[in-house]
Each structure stands twice: as structure tokens, then as C-alpha cells.
Amino acid sequence: MNRLTGLRYYHFIAGVLANQQHDPLCSICKAFTNSVQQARHEVEAYMMTYEAELTSLPAHDSIMLADIKKMLANLHPIPDSVGQKKAGNCLLPQGVCFVKSSKSLIDRISS
Image (cartoon, rainbow, N blue to C red; front, side):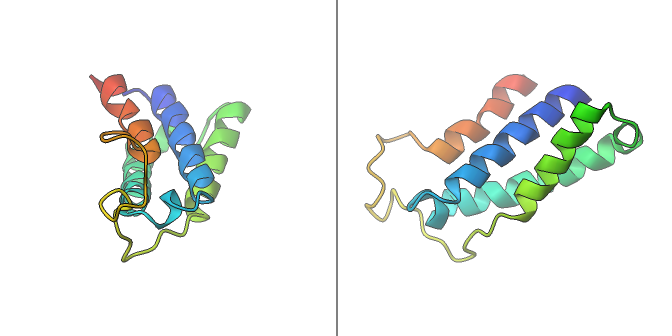
């Protein structure tokens, strides 16, 4: 994944997670907690990989990077969360998850 694609993807996934933090089920789900932790880890790795390039971004890319950092920093997943589908609370069809489906985009981008 190149720098720009990564920046756009991480901006997207941070936005999804920021939005789902206010969902009554997603916000207390293990999938949300795991996705937040994974996104934070991946963004750190992305920033290390492109460290030199990220210091001289065009203004619109700098804004996206600042948004990513802010959104991820403002997420507060529950450490001992429970999978809401397994608990019988999430009524989305089997194999459908707002958070996991959004996260799976990176697999299609990277392949």
C-alpha cells in the first residue's frame, strides 16, 4: 500500500470507528475493541514507514493525518468487551459486522 492509499484508508477506518463508538452495540463489542487496537497499531506502523514523507505533506493530507490521530485518540473501547453477536444482542446477519466489514477493505486494497 502506498502512502496516499494508506492515508485515505486510515482516515476512513478511523471515521468508521469514531462513528460506531456511539452505536449502542458496536461500542461495547469485542470486534470494536479489537479493531480500535489494531487500527492504532497499524497507524503507528504506517507513520514509522512513511515518517520522512509525512513531515512534508500537502495541506489537505496533513489535515487528514491530524484527523486520524484525533479520531483514534478519542476512541474509548471497553477492555473486557464481549462479542455482541455471540451474546445474542446483535441481530445483523451471520458474517455481517459494520466494524469488521469496514476493516476488511484493507485486504482488498493490499492484494
